[in-house]
Length: 199
Image 1 (cartoon, rainbow, N blue to C red):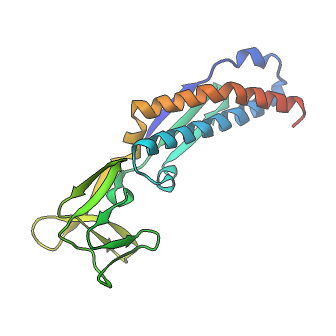
Image 2: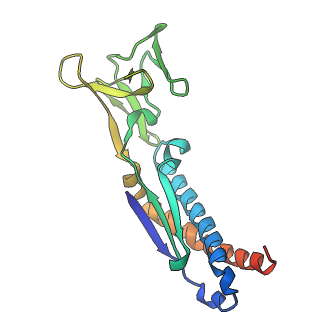
Image 3: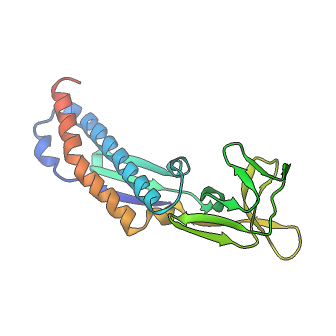
């Protein structure tokens, strides 16, 4: 698991004006909103670089606000990413990820001598020679596989960089920090104003 922890400044000047009984509620609201905006910025920057669907990424990125410490923690956890998630294509094979089917010539088949092409970095498609798309187990899991050795079995699923490594790049970290710094003043001011109105 990898996380980014950001300390938020500028609140001390407001605290003297706040009702102590409401302070924690105000902080929790403002921090949670800021954390969610930071998460969106991280997902947007990762997807600007990597060819991932938002659904696949959002399941691996979470947020945690710490009102007592005036801190936002955005974290990611997960294993390496299956290549099937990077728009995997195989010559002569039509793969419907939503339906979970792989078909060629009207029959369910996985292997092909043409290999599988994937686009991990946006705009950079490459071919994994000897790879093929197929299902394993009960047919519910579909992935990009290669044979281990020259025999038909065993086969091994191909994976690549995981979300913690994507998350840890300087571009992604900087995007999160900028977004949080931009949004925090407005969010805390909004919540203070909201509390002043009895909400």
